[in-house]
Length: 309
Image (cartoon, rainbow, N blue to C red; front, side, top):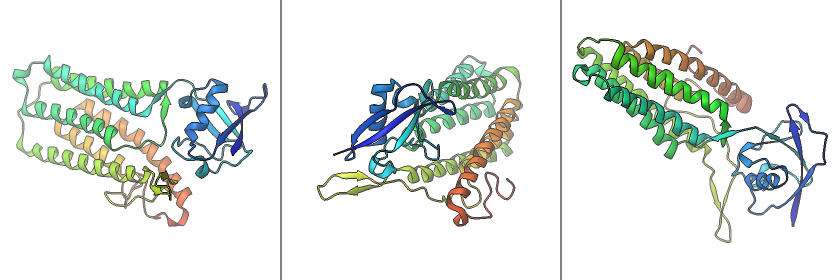
């Protein structure tokens, strides 16, 4: 027995009037949103990664490709709308490219600089940046669970520019070429410790968030395991008791520690710019949490900075 799903195309804010709707028939057993998108692609030639699939009123978006159709809320005979998002890049690939850039930049700038005259601060700063982005890569591989499969190729390019140029190149040039630094002062050791602490707290926040996005499995009578619907939870612990985006707060504090440790103008500028962008994301997430959880969401919790914002 198959379910009939009617698909229309949307361009911009308007449903395309030319052509007829697409009728897609899928067996509800063992079928997912990704299976539906693959069937849509056969007719529309829009690859699943480029599809933005919604209800006609845009009130519901079907972006979780692993979600079984029988848990998606899609009903037999329902009309859905698909929009072509244009060129996309997988989130995982974006992260790998973003984070490999600063590692490569820092490695080359460090190696081709005058290593004999490097201070202990410069050497420590080199490893702090390298290890920070190695941590990011390992998180991408083993921790992160992405709510969306891809991002626009243009946005991916901007993100890479941010990390490769504004962090890797500008910071490396200043630290290893443009400025002369005084000998390492022992009191600065404390900021290496702060940096490591904030990196650890950031990691624990990511682990906590990823646990919410992993779909639980339920064993059926025939022995097979079927994915259940994911339920978003209110995050607690590791700073989430004070702010909705504790991961962004600890990320910022790590870069503040690095900026004070190095007294680098490029690091300060990168920290300020990154904080501004993360604050925008944090406010958006904070509003989503309040809308989704209503009165259950802690009223004294801020978006990103405890007791302030």
